[in-house]
Image (cartoon, rainbow, N blue to C red):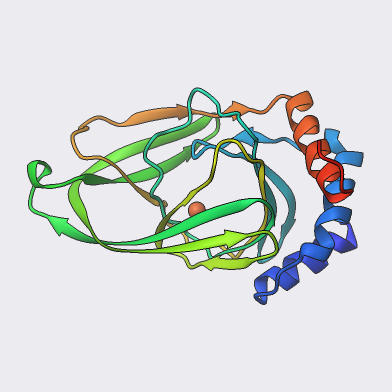
Length: 220
Ligand SMILES: [Fe+2]
């Protein structure tokens, strides 16, 4: 285990930003890039597990400039079974936290709640037959260097400008033993499979190089 990963994990869990550690961490990942197995997350970013700890994981998330993958889902409101402690190390994000009211039926609702079941080769979304409308939303604009925490069980989504690369380092806390939930289309009655989408090594390396160039003050 690289010492700097441990320091980043501990600092994020205690609520500190780690902008000073971002460059050495991402350099280390680039140097040993073959050890990592990045995937395209259904929410639109490249997801890379950096290190496992007893109490959670250190992760790198990259939203590439101008790129998305064809399986990215439109509706992105979800919650987590762990606390998400993030530092935005490049770009801007709009984090939106939601509260919902339950609706009587699909006709009166914008959302249905889904349970996410993780499988070896992807995940399955199971409609619950329970319907919801937004009661309240709280928007927070985040920029480079900001720390933000999304507690377990809080429904949220993160929005970004497609033209700009956005990078976060994330420490997750120990997970609860249950399936995570998301809010999706009100009308679906069948479960839907989302295949795991691997991120090509050269795409990942290009994105990492773009972050490192940014840290070094180049335009690329
Ligand atoms: Fe999230």
